[in-house]
Image 1 (cartoon, rainbow, N blue to C red):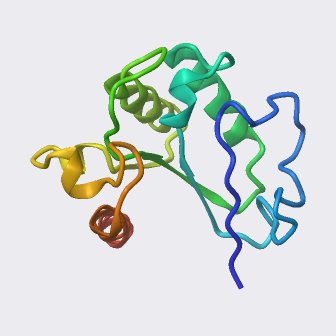
Image 2 (image 1 turned 90 degrees about the vertical axis):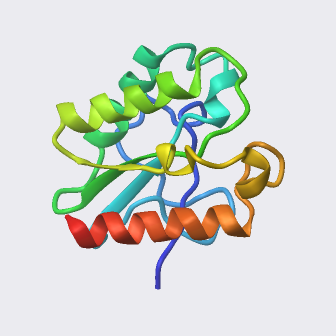
Length: 150
């Protein structure tokens, strides 16, 4: 059985010493000691937050999240698909902050942002933010390809 835990940079409590043992839906855990991988795709919804106002704050929050990964669990940082520009920083700033954090901590990085360079957002999103079926399919294939090639 696998669990999905969804938490953005703005809802993550940086004072935490562990990940929550249960998500808000009461049906799964954030990370279990048996998990081999933890995927982090962050930044898009956080662009308009009051808590995460800069790429530096993205890196700080990611670093704290990475520090809580259970031993033996491999983190994978991912840049999300492009979205309409808004908020405190650009999508390019977000991608760069995630990539820099991955490099600093020598963890895997999957670029789901530049995957969509050649496409209009209407092709792969429902609302210039959330992926549609085509977008989800492209992201899934990119993740699988990245894992297989590592």
